[in-house]
Amino acid sequence: MNQAARVPASTAYLQGLRQLLDRIERQQAEQIEAAAQMMAGCIGRGGIVHLFGSGHSMLPALEIFPRYGSFVGLHPIVDPRLFWFNVLGSFGVPEMLFLQNTEGYAEVMLDGQHLHDGDVLVVFSHGGTSAVVVDAARYAKARGMTVIAVSSSEAAAASARHSSGAKLSDLADLTIDTFAPRGEALVPVEGLEEPVGAATTVLAMAAGLAAVSRAAELLVAAGHPIVQSVRAEKNETKAYRSVYDAYEQSLRRLETP
Image (tube, rainbow, N blue to C red; front, top):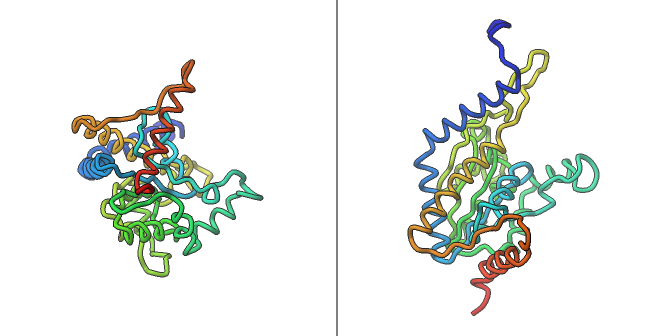
């Protein structure tokens, strides 16, 4: 490309992101529909759709619930030890990476997360090779849950790192492909060895929210009552409390005789 034809890196990033989102829409429509059907079926039966990821892949789970635009029946599994709140020091990246790649940790963590037979576990992971996501999928499958992966086929082509030889894509009942490049970033910049402008989180969020939006539509069509998250407007405290009460009740559904 000659100098005159080059666009700013900001434009190149948005164009690259748009191309990948368009590709997801074209090539993953069936997978998104199938995921939505699984989610709606689970919630319609009184089950829970659990959302899990580690590192930056925890962000799609946090974006789906409890923020506005969502509804009760979705459960983000949030372990602060699997995210970073500092770059270095306590709750820093090195600690998170250690736990993310330590086999056996996921089972201990998930034992306290209200997971039940018939539920759905959505696992967000760029490549699906870390110990914690493989162990999470194995844990869910052993307990009769459906596993949906949101990951990149290009990144998943890397060799398995888990001692079982499995990757998330081997264990999932369904995979939504984000098509994110293995290196995660989209924009080459002259003078830099690696590209900039990570796209993995945006793409995973978009795919996850597309499936959740369709699940809501299916639930309404089936006549299932929906308790929605509320906007932050005046006098919202009571409305928030009603959502949280319904959410708490949904998590307790199988814990009482």
